[in-house]
Image 1 (cartoon, helix red, strand yellow):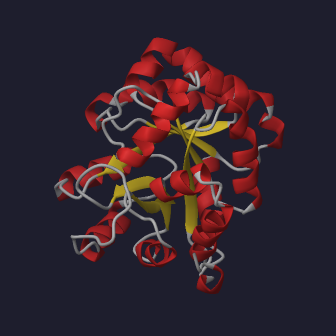
Image 2 (cartoon, rainbow, N blue to C red):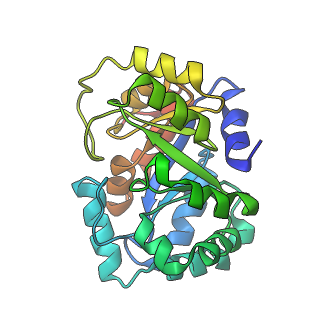
Image 3 (tube, helix red, strand yellow):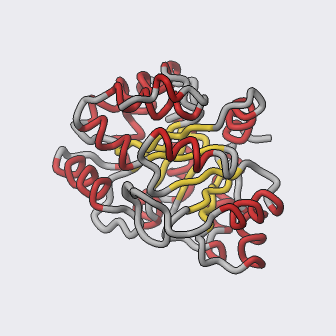
Length: 263
């Protein structure tokens, strides 16, 4: 069992749901990366998804795209993010999952990228623009270093493809809950119960819901479908505004404590 999968299962065995916040590395400057990760760690999140700013993000909605633009304007690069993570690796006790696109990985060099992940304490990788059929090269490079390649499953994937993606995913299966890009939603158009039931049936690892989840109530309702949630835009907005109370409310909801989840 990998480090990332183990962290999720240690959470769910207690009856809680896994909670993975997404942050944009360097939004507000690279000097914010360390305190942000350590604050989230103190809140007892399950893992942390660290987004890498990119000039042409295909999966990101306006909130995360703007955060990426702020980070790029501050001079943030993939190399600088890794250097920053490595500088306080010994203080990081929660698994980190990097979310980036394939171009930066390729430009960095696959093996050098994997080595930089290890040096920075990264345990997982999400690359939305690499489909299952082209992902072998990443797994072959990452796995010897103990790094999981997390696969995304869309709502439009047919059952046989869902089964193949679930079989190939590592750490957890990232179940996308909307047809479209990231961003807060007031409602979810699809009846997701059947979709998640099938995912849980075919997956040998935890299944987490992501995209559009932005309130404590949604953390509870969407988390109930599987093993936990990933929350992105709402976390990015709260951190940009310096609203840690909102972040704490979202985390508390994953532990079933809605009384502490009043925003």
